Length: 415
Image 1 (tube, rainbow, N blue to C red):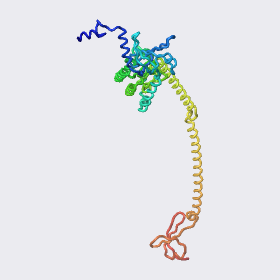
Image 2: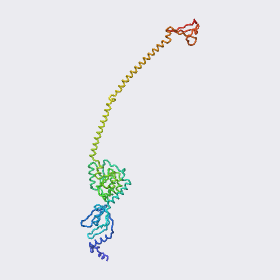
Image 3: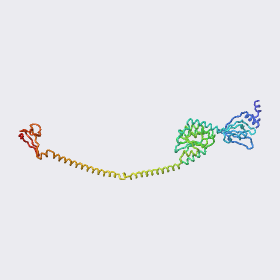
Image 4: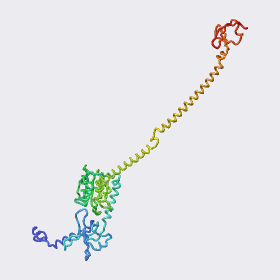
């Protein structure tokens, strides 16, 4: 009896199937029991038919490959405060519906709010303030970019224009440069884990001198992975210099602020990390010319100074001063000799005059004129000049000195 009842229930056997309308009606009934919901997503396609009062929207999840079909009154889109276009991030309020006529599911929307960019920028701004407070943007922590990197680590999308531009420009500027390329997804939910894994691998490679994180721009929603907190902190932990080349000028992702160098575009990154061979050779040639010219000018200037010094009299004729002083010395010596001779002559004459006067006034001259000096000779003691006859009584021995000698005599007393 159980088997008979099962065979008799509609849709439970091939002998008693549901008609299409039966399934459609039942599915519509089940879905109709669901309440209205708020849904956030990105408008992937917006269709406004000229003769229709209904707008058809495809809403996709930016973090996953999934989408929903929406329907709403045309006026809800046309009269929205913010213009609705493909790529706009929105929050919608609607009720799930199953259209039995076409067998399709959609969300019947009664309210749309465009909150994408404003909300995303607010979230990014809050994270920016947090990372800035922790010092991740401090310029003192920026690592210097090597002048001539041997190997460049490149993280970018597979076969992307950013990869082509960086490799082409860098190789054109310095043909010997090498690349270690890590291809990852650059948007969506899998971007951050893959980029972080590639970043760690390149940072651990001792041959990699600089790492470039590149993407060719995109919308704010597409660039969300490059403002992810996990990626920003991983960049700050790298020991290898990191260059951010996202190529999105109006609103820079946070990785631009954490990276050691921000490039406006992938092409700009290649130019800033790889020197131009031709430009460097031209610079070297110019520096050689300038240094040679400076050296020649210095030598000429110093030679001119030496020539001026040599032309001065003291160096042109260094003995002239000595010769002039020698003549003065000779004249001084002659004058001194004359003065000394004159002094000696004058003093000699004075001495001669004094000698003559001394001779004239001396006892010898007096004795020569017939005078004599008489001395008494006592029995003991020194002879004494006889000054009076009383001093020479009879018998006194006398010594008489005349001009040519002296004689002895005996006094006979006073006469």
